[in-house]
Image (cartoon, rainbow, N blue to C red; front, top):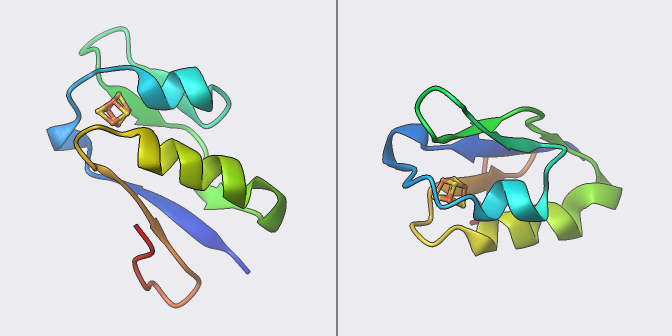
Length: 73
Ligand code: SF4
């Protein structure tokens, strides 16, 4: 199973929640202040934290697709 993060970066409001929760996969960009997705792949072990990360985004610009590209969030 390979789920993937999808980031609608254009609409990121630079709140920092994703990077605070999941600093390995999300980092704040020092140039424009928006979040950068560092690792898009999601293993089974990582799924719970990665889903929490997506849910933490106040403007819902973090999505997760399953292996069939079906949007889960
Ligand atoms: S949680 Fe959402 S709005 Fe906040 S920095 Fe991350 S992607 Fe941007």
